[in-house]
Length: 265
Image 1 (cartoon, rainbow, N blue to C red):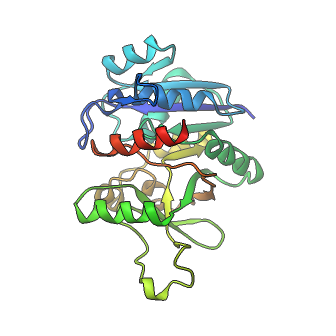
Image 2: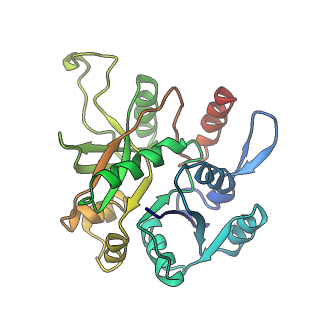
């Protein structure tokens, strides 16, 4: 099975302008950009045939070429990463059995998250797309709640059925949890949606032909377009294996990611 990773990256983020080029300080004192660290993560994934960065911005393209990445230039009309991946595939005539969309704001994404996605898609030929979900630990759940109380988005949560078919994704912390009703207070029944997607090429091509739905517009979550058009999303539960996972959504997240990098060193 030929699998490729496309990392969509844009400069004009509404919440964090220039986010792909934000610098993170590594434990040894060196600095690397967010996009370079995401690229290095992609290159560590077993079973990947190629890695590309798709962008509409020359600053990101030049930075990516400087650290050796192959760049696909896309238009500035792409509204989200999935549209950018679809356009990159169309413009280049890229042929693959699976296209992986690795968001460029999650440098802590462990390679095995993506490897688990690939295995899940191989095991279920009927699945059009899949995405990882990670059970929240108490510390991360508390950080999610803190961010929402301060009107920040700490991450996206996923709700799915017993067959791991997605029912909804939200930037709110779902589901509502009453601590007095938890059978095990250390086992939080809430799941962090990890911003990685594996698509069949046909599903990715179809995506661009569908209009944005009201829920996608309200939440600002691209994957809701699949649900709003009656397509299923397979959620794949992944294990952190002791690693801290956090996305860079706000400038405040830089310190959290740098702290996690120090713990991993």
